[in-house]
Amino acid sequence: MSKLLVKGGNRLEGSIRVKGAKNSVLPILAATVLNGGINVIHDIPNLSDVKLMIKILKSIGCSVKKEGNTVIVDSSKLNNYEIPEDLVREMRSSIVFLGSVLTRCGKVQISYPGGCELGPRPIDLHLKALREMGATIKEEHGFLLCDLKNKLQGTEIQLDFPSVGATENIMLAAVFAEGTTIIRNAAREPEIQDLQTFINQMGGKVTGAGSATISIEGVNKNKLKDVEHRIIPDRIVAGTYLIAAAITRGDVILNNIIPEHIQSTLFKLREAGSTIISSKNSIRIIAPQNIRAIEAIRTMPYPGFPTDMQSQMMTLMAISDGITIFKENIFENRYKHANELTRMNANIKIDGRVAIVKGVKELSGATVSANDLRGGASLILAGLAADGQTIIENSKHVYRGYDNIDGDLNNVGAEIVRI
Ligand code: EPZ
Image (cartoon, rainbow, N blue to C red; front, top):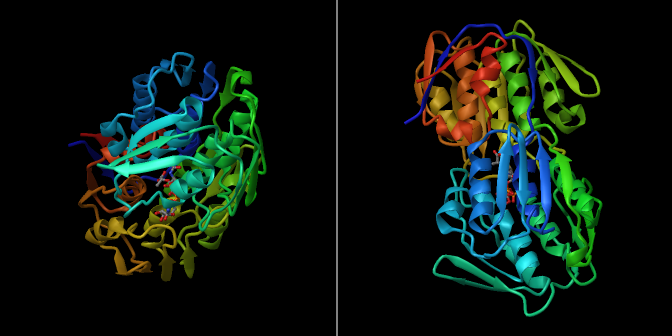
């Protein structure tokens, strides 16, 4: 079992370059099957989730080469529409292959993605939309078997919830559909805009990403081109590092970040007393001597406060000068880190989707366990501020979404060791 040891009490100071966004890389890797050609993608982070996506691409006949942080996918020899069950069960976000393989091959077999550590993760919105576009989808023995009697039909889709995954699957499925597909109440995350850029560079015709209404005009399957693309910076990794600086009363500059993408986090950090100076592609945070409590944090779809930053912000509020009420509106079960923080002397009460955090003077180092990706990162942040040493078990969760977080933070003064 992989563990991290974090020594508390070091002030972080210096600069860190933010790498490419995990949640942009995953759908874009799925999109490489569309053009049956060469896709050169730069600034890909070294993550276990990315390795899994590459394994899936190879398993359906694509050839994939990795040169540093550049991945080259050749999807011309794609010869299989069955996505390996073990890989899908290991990473639910591989469901994004549903739309791209279905529209490229006319059929796809993929295992029903399990729930995950954040609670049940249904895909009802994905399936409803694809059926409205004309896909026949059978669900049996834990598998989804989809096929198309003929091309998918462009249609108007109203999402009940601005689901990121459902928006991405519909965009990918609609690229070759007959006519135009409109997605209303679409997710507006920057990663959706990055996917639109990638699809359009291939020769697709997508407009509106970043707004609540996205339009995809179907194009001829044989007219797509090779693509070269650079992934946008990871706004959640950036937000995590900003909180690492705030919680250690540090002074850190992040390079390669788009401030627009993390405005909600920046405003909360200012409310908590930090000074934030941002330029076109960098952000400097100067932490206050003491952290001010923020009255309320509600997670919302983008551009609201991101659910992926909730656990990290909770860690910061755990040593604030007052009480913060959290409301987790996106996932059912995203407070598992609270128990672990309590073991470190935090004062947190959970009541369903609400968490009440009363700041304490200091956290104390302890042995804690990571249950999910962002919760694991929040325990690293707690360890940085705690008195003494903290050991984080199951740190493999963290490597799913953070490329060398220990190395990055050690470069600005942290002392984190892999044991
Ligand atoms: C994406 O997950 C991200 N993952 C998540 O990041 C992120 O937390 C989430 O969006 C919300 O921003 C990737 O992009 C790979 P959703 P996704 O579909 O697409 C419910 C991380 O830490 N829902 O927007 O799975 C669902 O149960 C990860 O990097 C349905 O009910 O999120 C959840 O409660 C964690 N039916 C809510 O919507 C559906 O058909 C948000 O889900 C689909 C979703």
